[in-house]
Amino acid sequence: MSSAQKVSSAQPHDGRKDGSEGDTVKTAALKDILLGNMRSYGIYLALVVVILIFQILTGNRLLNPNNVVALFQQNAYVLITAIGMLMVIIGTHIDLSVGSVVAFIGGVGAFAMKNWDMNWFLAIMLMIALGLIIGAWHGFWVAYVGVPAFVTTLGGMLIFRGLATVVAGESIPLSSQPFRAIAKDYLPNIFGFWGDLDGLTLVVGAVFILLLIWVQIRKRNKTIKAKLTVEPISWTIIKCLLGSAVIGFLTYLLASSGNDTQGGIPIVLVIIGLLIGVYWFVLNRMVFGRQIYAVGGNRNAALLSGINTRLVDFKIFLNMGFLTAIASIVTLSRLASATAATGQEFEMDAIAACFIGGAAVAGGVGTIPGAIVGALIMGVLNQGLSIMGADAAIVKTIKGLVVIAAVAYDLISKKQKA
Image (cartoon, rainbow, N blue to C red; front, side, top):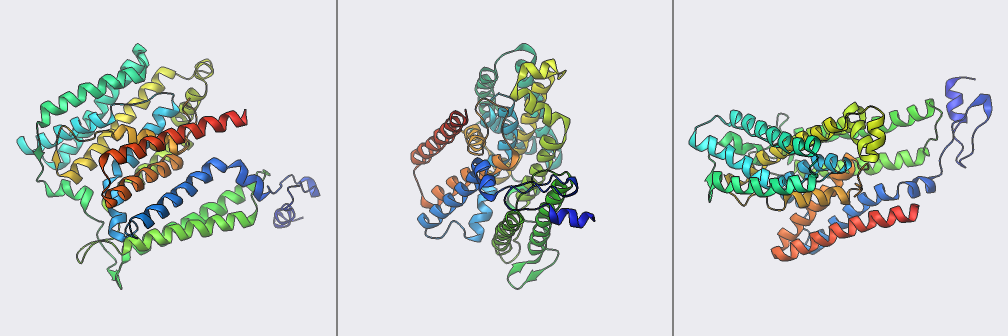
């Protein structure tokens, strides 16, 4: 029997094994797939529901092309810090200093460019180095001294907010146009306009659709070759169609954005995309990522298996410092000035994004896609309420309720499984 015949004969849709020539590949029932992935699929459904609600409440303004670009530009800090916070939470820690560190690093960067006439690129390097130093500072106390992360970063929140006040004072304006371009400019339109649409954006969107389809087909074929339970072909097709529709719609919105001189893909979205790709690879394909999950799942077992848990904890906070510096760069670029009040409650948005995205309160559980979807939900909340002109008190109240609901859902789900 040929390999093609084996594959075709190994796909009964009733979930039973195919016994021909020792084949053990079987097809999972669609109902079982949906029930088994209720939490992960529910996050995507929640994002769609939140978008639809605010699209109605804002009078169809939320999904205006320029508002979609603004959503990414104004909420880039959530998407970036959520990645780092996810790794912190998986490792059973927390970081309460994010907002204060963003303010301090931004103040130093703005001070250097304004008072020392530092080149914008060197200022970026300085800000990243400062983020790594602060991350190492937190990591040292948590990993090697044994001070709980809550206490360490609570102290950091106070320390760096105070230092931000010293450095930035009331405000330090930023005049460097190349630096400001990071948050407000777009990729060059090298393919020109196709009608009223940005050509480069259309090409990139088409590439991502093809990539999505290729990944789904490759994943399915690898599952079949490994003789593991494979999802129904209908579900693979549905995922490809839904994913392509989402990418296509976002591509259209981005290609329609901007003005007469520039539009399409904002630079900040490229930065976010690169970080998502890199950190997905780190958590899913690298030893360090597996060690984080191992430490978060059972610290004692990880230690007995030979993992240097202290070094893992140190690296987690070192990485958090790096990503906080990136968030500070993007935030300073967007605001065009540094103030001591910058970054207030940034850490809360990042923590909320992780819990909404499926990270477990007890650690050991969480994914990059989940954290990003959670960050998008927070971003839509921020953007939608901003468009509606909601009072700051209402915004904080809604965010607080969302965080409580997400954590409660996680705890209730665990009790039901137990």
